[in-house]
Image 1 (spheres, rainbow, N blue to C red):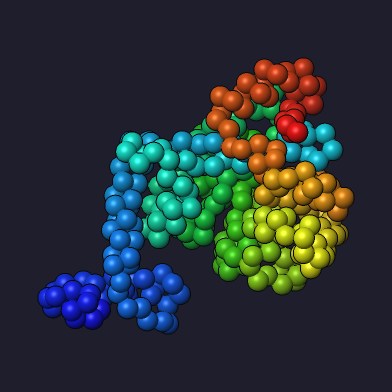
Image 2 (image 1 turned 135 degrees about the horizontal axis):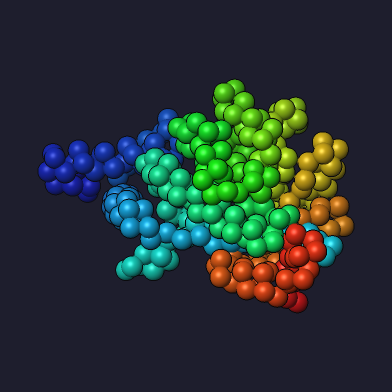
Length: 316
């Protein structure tokens, strides 16, 4: 922080230098930053949202939306991904891309994550008992939760509390988190899989896992990052990578899910590659539990009774 551009007093200069230091840490460490007013604005925003998030957790101002993942052949529902939403009383909707990193940096993700997993399992238990016995609920789990929660006991206790079978739960963990997980965490995930919980590797293709690492990870599902889907029709290299990952997944006995499918051309492409499950705005935006219940439980009641799942038709 430089006098007089950054601040006019020694105390204020130290505060501004502190802000620059935190920005340097956030941007990757091992670097330096010179204070700018924009940094101060971001820091104030960070602390403001941090305090507001604490209040929101205490007052239960978060809610869940559910995005369906469907089979490409007949649009039957494979599972729903539970997505956390925050409707701030003054600012309105605050994007997860803004509040989730703050929750993780501050460890508030532990308290928020407890609520997310409990509410997700509670909702899926209601749907399961209503007839959705072949549908799973998918919940995102962060590296902070894996480190600070006894994962097996934590998950199994919530399943017991909500009455949801382990086979109806999927945990999504990002590739970067999985490939750096400790041996103990991997053992906990293996134990969950043995109990029936499905494990998915999320944002696959954005990390740096080798093929041998992939073979050793305790996973059942690969979720291809939306970057590959967005580029595959226009970039031959992305197309080849997508095709190779699809083939590899099938050879390893893993289910492949294409994320971020927003156009019919993308839908047809992944279908032609043998990818059988898709997620994205083409299928559906995240929906409230009320809308899901109406669309699946009321409109497809006979089909669901016969199959244990519902149909989520794509609107052309």
